[in-house]
Length: 111
Length: 113
Image (cartoon, rainbow over all chains, first blue to last red):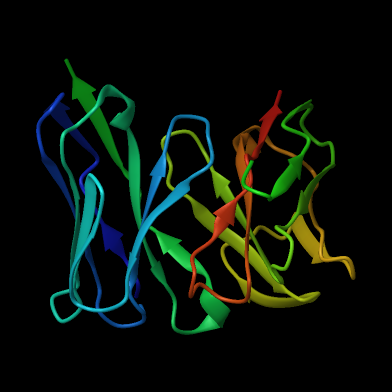
């Protein structure tokens, strides 16, 4: 199987740091994506980790451990506009590249 | 503007009816993917086309069908609509597979009444 698990919701304070975790079954995925989705809008690409380790991109960083089937998205200096759903997704080895999405983590940033 | 165009943005229709959702991929992208997102549900993969050919199929109902035309635009046909089909339907495109991720369109919100 290719299940992806992430917490349903999280709350954090403006200016703080938050880490959103994602675990998945290690077989069948070639790396891991993170997307951000505001309510009623299209998901937008945040990051793609194909190798183990940390990738930093401004206020957002993403980490991957392929052997552990574990990834996290780290958001620093939280802003109110970061309130959104964060989706991790794995590209399937077979069937030509479809992305399997987790249920998403609804992040609420409070003042 | 992501470059992926979906029409219509909103659609309200009655149970039992049939609708067609349209997607034009980003210029240069050969793959088109369709996803369904119901209220409080994650993105559920429906089907993928690559350069006119079906490449992968998800949990797509038999009442649903899709195709990709020579100009690479795609249509998702939903028939015998039920209340439970009310959802956001997203189209995404990529060059081929997922090496560079997807680009999503803004979605079509379908409401079945």
